[in-house]
Length: 303
Ligand SMILES: [Zn+2]
Image (cartoon, rainbow, N blue to C red; front, top):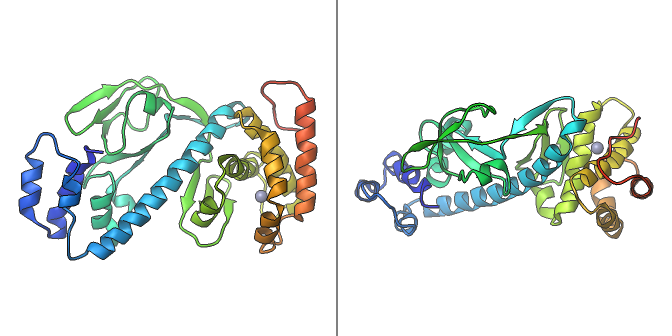
């Protein structure tokens, strides 16, 4: 990633690091990748290394969750009352971050002091196909609309980029820093804890969790409603949403069966979900119904 380097170097003045390095590097038209290593600030190295590791870990998890969530949201757009156009990119601004970590964010993340920058791109998405890359700055055209190009500055100059976003269900999934494995939704967004994303190594197993939360959003399930009914319905819906997105749901249910002890352990912390045996039986029945039904797109079962 050569382009974010300009922004990285801009942070040095702010951090009181060597101006000489910054000036030399910024005057280069093409910056060598190695400059990142050369320019690392020595005195705060421990903090920086730690922060960089946290950012990298969080970024990798966020990208994984965004990719799975987007696949489910685009494939199931016909089921959602509310959709939005999604190009498969996420953005950020420096003031999205708490003031005390802004110098570090500026140093280690792909953004500058002013403006909106591309944070991540979902592989295979319209943004990826249009060759938009993390670290590039959005000059205009945000939020994306179908009849308006996005003007992007890639560090070497700005240019309009035609991009065709796809309709996707709302309720994107995000990763939050939390030590306990958990997934939840407030009815608008879905939150997965870092501990959960780390624990669930298989993408389809993670898709089942995200799709389960999507069902709570789609159905408008409420916290004070009958929880077991809602939870079993969310499991049933999750298989439908996954199948519409092309996941192998036979393997997913088989995987759930194999991992039942893990589910039992993590669920013993929570009284809101039915016992794992009941959930598994429900998943198996839902799978059998889907497999016995016609091929192609499936709408959610009437409650
Ligand atoms: Zn649930």
